[in-house]
Length: 359
Image (cartoon, rainbow, N blue to C red):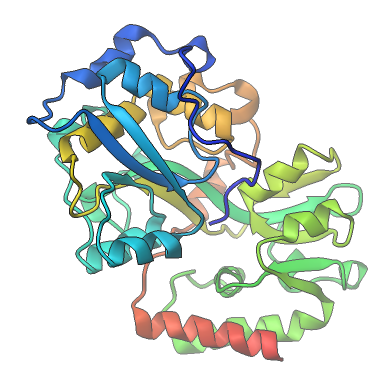
């Protein structure tokens, strides 16, 4: 999933204030109690760009004495390829839901020692037992979000996937879709199927719907639909919520909705890769992130939805009431998380997308 593309200068290693002034020394020191079995006082973290609190890393070091090396990647594919070639020394990584499953299948992750992560009790029940990692043996949730429709309020008010997948004439030529297989999944959802369908007939039906609608699609954008929306080139864009939130800050006429049929709910997680040189420190880092005040401060800073039920008490009301960040519960419950369906089925989705783009 795309992340917010605001400039990011890396961790604020010279800062000594706590995030938002809300993290107490007593809370922070809680992470220091976990034994590190003689490990060096270091943890190597590999995360998405623009995806950590302003002082989170300093706060962790201040609380535990463990220094943080913090490297960035741009995509799940980049993360997977680097770790598949052999762990170069990372302790904590942040793969998305379907890539967790791929990494489990490839024997790339260490099982978590749940006793070393007591703050897992704060996780919302919705996120406790995902299909991609039953029982949370290998991953714990970090942030989540949705795919939906960004739109210009002065000319559109979408509520269904129909607005972008079967547009009416008023918006014909004013719609952008994503140029990846998630557009096939959105079409499946609109047709009443699962986004994780393995039925070739259903996948073909989704492709045919998109082919019929293609005359009204201005662009199959490589995750730049938000820019087309901001520039006024389209009125409706199928996009990830974080990307639309970014342009909503620049134009008050823009908004975002998760369609009434439900959507894709993505989830980024915290995992420990096999070969991690500091696994105990990795557990301490994950436990620290799951501290409600810490998790809330990160979510508030980066404007993504937090899966930590206890953290919601520390998140601003305006964020909690923003449906672009936290969609209504009933819509969330209709949404699904993508799972890894095996290479044979994944290739059906790729071929379906190729048919749509070539039509």
